[in-house]
Image (cartoon, rainbow, N blue to C red; front, side):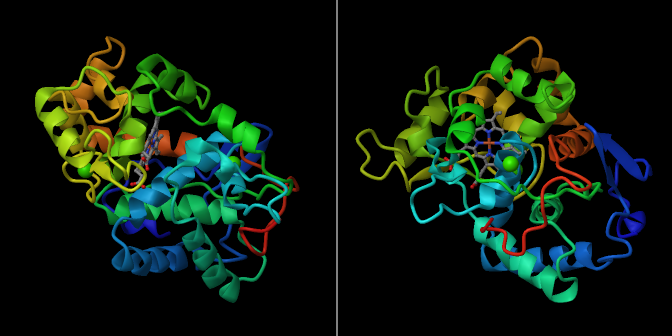
Length: 313
Ligand code: HEM
Ligand SMILES: [Ca+2]
Ligand SMILES: [Ca+2]
């Protein structure tokens, strides 16, 4: 409904998508909460006005949720009286922000449709609004995810989240598991068109292009006492969802190891070259990659639960 008026949609109109044993559908809340997409859209607008760095944080939050036991809002669970470590206890979740804004969106939704909409679906809707609000494609996402009802695992997060120094082959492995082609894998990395990388994550980066090295030295001086708070932009237009990430990478300015290797590796280089000159093509591939990532390992039907508070089991 929302999207039929939108000329930026790159998708066809099927009504359900098969995921594992279950099913997500585009009309899942049509009867139980028809306003949900509008509520999340309006909520994200005010959250982003208040803090323009929120869209980047929410997009990464979605990836880190889906990567660990699927898109089940497990990343939102707070540690339980300090005895049971949550996923956030993993060093690899360093820099994850804006979990609390999903709780804000959830209470806006609960006020209108009590106990109908999962935190997992709200998280995916927030991430797709984050892309759209930043100038990226408007992505139609199938809904019907349920929330995890068991305690989160710090060990699982630690094992499954990618290390900051991951290379191209490792990255392709991560997304092949989600059924993505190489083109889609290169496109989903275009999420790094938004946001920042803390200096902490750049220690050990080698083979850095001279101009970029100068920038890194300025932002992250050797012996910096603040590697956890100082940062560099992921691309020069870090608040805009555009194809500058690829242009930047082609020019040897990729920030993380994988960003830098993407235009050099024979399996990924042709797609980087194309996306650097074809933003529409990037948006189209990003859209199908986003639907695959956000449908990964979901709980549906009578699996899992619908949490009332997203941060509490
Ligand atoms: C699998 C390969 C990937 C690796 C190794 C990787 C690694 C990283 C690292 C180390 C950071 C910096 C975090 C910080 O210092 O605060 C980062 C930031 C970010 N990542 Fe990734 N990432 C990958 C894939 C993705 C995917 C698939 C998405 C989304 C679909 C994504 C979205 C983001 C965003 C938006 C930021 C900026 C966050 C902010 O500004 O708060 N990344 N990534
Ligand atoms: Ca999860
Ligand atoms: Ca950008």
